[in-house]
Image 1 (cartoon, rainbow, N blue to C red):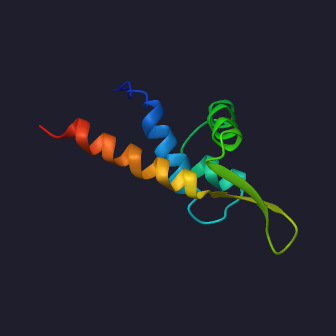
Image 2: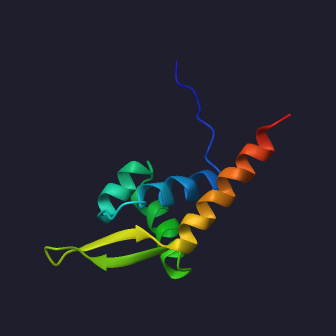
Length: 89
């Protein structure tokens, strides 16, 4: 029997994306780690990039990788605390 899985919230998706970039990583890996399709990934990813939560850097091979900024790590902490606060009795 097929069950409908509830959609993740903006908070949950943002946490997944920023967690995936705690170490420098390629975009494809971020998309897989955050379990998003291409369109949804691009919507969220480029918003976080534009707002300075994720930065684009060049790796040792000259390719582009992405990493959470200090601001992104702060956002991650705040969102985790908010989730914890919202789920406590």
